Image (cartoon, rainbow, N blue to C red; front, side, top):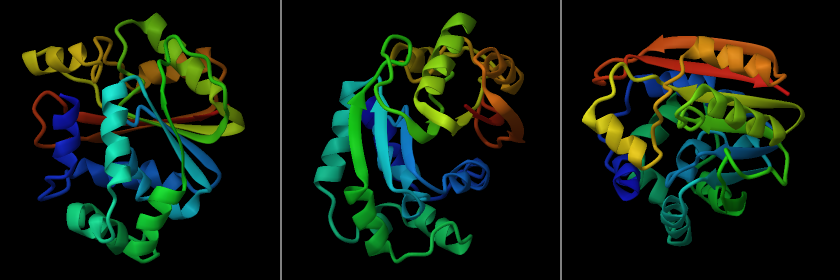
Length: 235
């Protein structure tokens, strides 16, 4: 499942429509400092391509050691030209919409050199030992089964942030617990809670976050996933 998840990113023929909303309302907001990708999975470099030139470093945390091994191997085997060869649609979008401005070879260099830490991390059990300016949680915080666990995950994200730091969460609740969803749940890529933006707002407030903001966008052509929630808050 983890290898399949990673391979999907390397087989792009077109970019999903909702990725534009992720880029405009999440990736563009990553504009300084040290970043933690909480739930980076096996594609820790992918979203980083859109913000790497604006930050000092990025670190990739994930529950799955297998997923992180896949990511680390891809970074280890990085070759000049890989960005434009393996991610032409995404890179073209980033340049067209002025999300990035530096040449591909410079983005490639920074993807490798600015990678600070790759760490297996369970946000329901592990204690943060570093703090970051920005925590990006792309489809990771909802990978829980209960509201109490969701609050625990958000408290961990809070602990990963410096005072004034920004949490950016991207997620999409499913409409029905299908066989595909249950398979993802088995690999901890999906959870049973499936929280919506209003649940995020409630839990973020309970954890002491401030400046909470939620936005919801429609998702097309994805069976069982019809909305995208982007929720941000500051410590």
